[in-house]
Each structure stands twice: as C-alpha cells, then as structure tokens.
Length: 172
Image (cartoon, rainbow, N blue to C red; front, side, top):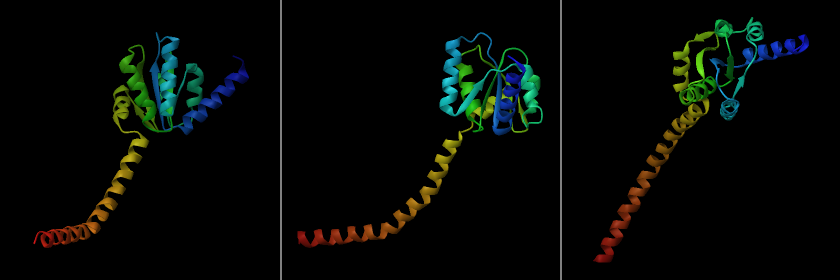
C-alpha cells in the first residue's frame, strides 16, 4: 500500500470514527472467509459495518476523535465494527461471538465512554433504535385507542338497552 492509499484510508477511518455512535473492537484470528462474509452480511442487515484495517493506521485515525479510548485494544488481528445506531454493531458482534468462538470481543467505545467486553455485551441487550421507535408509537397510540373506546362505550350501551327493550316487546 503506497502513501496516498494509506493517507486515504486514515482519512476515511477518521470520518468513520467521528460520525458513528459506537465502535466495537474484536479479535478475528481463526475465522474463515465464509465466517467473515457471514459476519459482514449480518452487520449490513443490521445497518452496521465491519472493517479490518492495519492497527497502526487505525490508531492514527483515532487521534482527535471521541472514540480514541479504543487505541490500546488495537493489538493483534483486530476488526472494527461500527454503526450510527448505538446498539446495532454491538448486538450483531455479540450474537456472532456466541455462535463462533473465534471472534473474541475486546471492548469498544460509545461516544467518549470506553466499554470493556461486558459493557459491549450489556449494550447488545438494549433494544435497537427501531424497536424503541415501535414501542414509542405503541405508547402514543394506546391512549388514543382508549379514548375512542370510552367515547363509543355509552353509545354501545344505549344500543344494547334499546335492543333488549325491542326483544322484550317482541316476546310480549
């Protein structure tokens, strides 16, 4: 890789580190190409990305970013998983690590907060941004539905009373 390609990679990584909410660092030694492709496709479906970069270039790109706390983790064969959704990258990485013991989560960062492996696992248990939006919409819709039921309830009761009187008159 020549100097210009390295400079481009550093600037690209710097942009990634400044724009994304969470970065997860993991060792991938022993993963097959098929496993890496599977991990990348799962990350892509969740809205996250996996990048394998030289540790030296990644540490240069970390300078001046909020996630600079992950610099000590960049030793050995590491991969970087990142996403703008604070939960997506962590969730996919932890789920993949459960089924494949070759992926070892070292830690990560969420904004300026450094995360150890347990912190990444805790982050993965949180609901995703889409799930939270769905719950919020459900909470907002619930009162409106209840109001409609309360407003319609007296009319329904009156209709039942009239129906009962009509049946009573027919029977008589």
